[in-house]
Length: 408
Image (tube, rainbow, N blue to C red; front, side, top):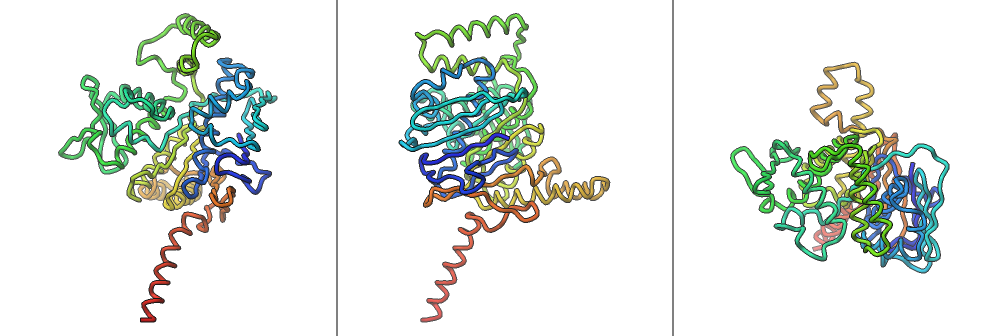
């Protein structure tokens, strides 16, 4: 299991106050807490280190390329817009499968681990700004957007062009279709159609997340073929050689080299999908939040090595995870009873149930700059968490108002 520990980075001060500071990256990892508490910062670091380890494992980059002074901070962390989070006493350590990375005193050091087996991930960072790719015409023509948004846009565009027939969506009894000639993305209801750019903000946020997740999760193990144009092994080897020559050319800029690495990645079969999602609940009604969470869990379950990391402000997300865990417990007890399994499937799709041991939930405190792991009871996440406490606070405020009313 990969793990990370962080101190004095952005809003993070002491970091995790248990487990010697290590945040374990489980099959399902959830970060909860107030805005500005460091949830996304940690998620972005995990995404960056996972990508770096993949680049090293393929030989696209060398250890010396990453260890160059300030390269990690000013290049790779700048991509995620977290380069200004560093302080003089920042300490970051990440342990993957093949490499460990340690940042201290302004320097990054990488060590090779004695682990012969490495599984290649397809890493997708789904930014909170994703509704932008739905709401704006030709977002690829705009400048100064966050770099991860451009990457996500590329995946969304590719996923749309691979759609051959309408895709049924898990919310609002809608389906999604893409007309290639017109380059129009549309939502189809019972008796109407609407262009995605004219849809509600919730749908504009949900659709790209769902389409990209579905496409990437179902594509694991398949070889990307440049939109159906088959390449021979000899052609792939020739292209790989040409791309490596680009990487070694010191006269070319870093953006071109990054593009070459991304293209090299498309030639490699991935073993699992690491889906990192900011605020999956964004602009969605609670019932729709439940459906998108169960969809994300279902696609995460397609491959035993898949991973899902989510940041959230929604108290409903933890509750829906509890439902999925309890459903999995019940499923194990009724596995030989088709009637009860069918009844269970009507409540929650059996494909979305999850093992409690696969879930880690961490709470971020923006005041103390600390992180703590949420406790569980018989595998079910504790309801005594920051999100539920925020809900209970409204009841406390209402009680205080009633007390004043009684004094009148």
